[in-house]
Length: 152
Length: 152
DNA sequence: TATTGTTATACTCTATAACTATA
DNA sequence: TATAGTTATAGAGTATAACAATA
Image (tube, helix red, strand yellow):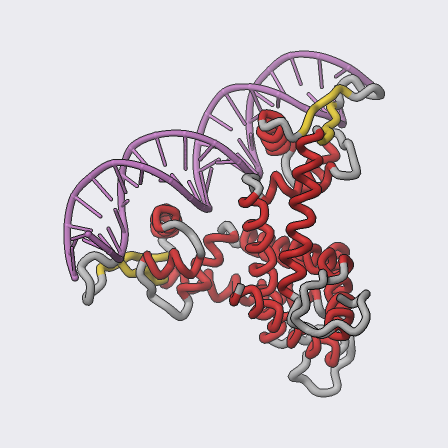
C-alpha cells in the first residue's frame, strides 16, 4: 500500500513487494539463526520449540498439539524422541485418566535455558546495527504483525 | 539496548527481550503463512523454495545445494521428487560432462507463479493493519535486519 | 458417543558414506 | 586427485487411519 495514494488501513490493496520480500527474507535469516543455535545444542528446531513451550507449562499431549499446530500423533513421536533423550518426562493427569502431561527434566530445563539465551543473543545480534530508537520502533511493529498472524 | 542509557549503535549490550521475542514470533507467523500456501498447492515449503529459486535460474545440482544450504544428496532427493511430479526437469550440462542442470517445466512455472502471488498476498495481509508510513518504515528496518543476517 | 493418546504405515526431508563418471 | 552426481541407509518430522482406554 505504500505505493498507493490516500488508502486507509485495512484496505484490500496489496502491500508493497519490497515489504513482503524483506519480511520473507527476514524470517529466513531468523529461522537460520535459530536452526544454527539448536544444532549447536544437538536438537532440531522443533525439539527446541517443544522445550521452549515446556519452560513455563506442563501441558497435556492435546494442548501441546494445539500449541505446535501438529497432529496428536506427531506430538506422540516428538515427545517419544525427547523422552528417549532424557529431556522431558510424561506423567498421567490426576484430573483425567485419559490425559498425559509432559514436563521438562532437569537436563531438559538446562538445555532450554541455555538455548534460549543463545537464541536471544544471536537474534539480538541481527538488530545490533539499528539505533535504540529504531529498535523500539521495530519491536512495536514486529509485535503488531505477529499479532495479526495469530489472529489470522 | 532500548532499556539501556547512552548506548551507541553497534555496542555489545543485548537487545531488548521484547524485540527478540516479537521477532521470533513474527518469523513463526510468516513461516506458517508460507507453509499454508504451499500446502494449498500440495507442495512442501522446501519444494516451494526450490521452485522459487528456479524461476530465474537453471542451476547445476551443486549450485542448488549452495543456494539451499543442503547436502548434494538431499538435493538429489528433492529434485527426484519434484521431477516425479512433473515440476522440474534435469538436463546434462554442455560445458561439463559431470554436471546436471535443473529447470522448471511449464507446470512447475505455473505453480511457482501462482504460489508466489499467494504468498505475497497472504504475507501482505499480515501487514495490512499498519499505516502506509508504518509499512514503509517496517520495510526499511526489515531489509536492514535481513541484510545483517546474510552478512553474519 | 466423544475425547485422549498410541501405534501402524507411508511419505518428505536431511545427512553420512560409498560409489561412478568426468575433469 | 578432485569434483559432480547418485544411491543406500538411517533417522527426524509429519499426517491419516485404526485402535484402546477413559469420560
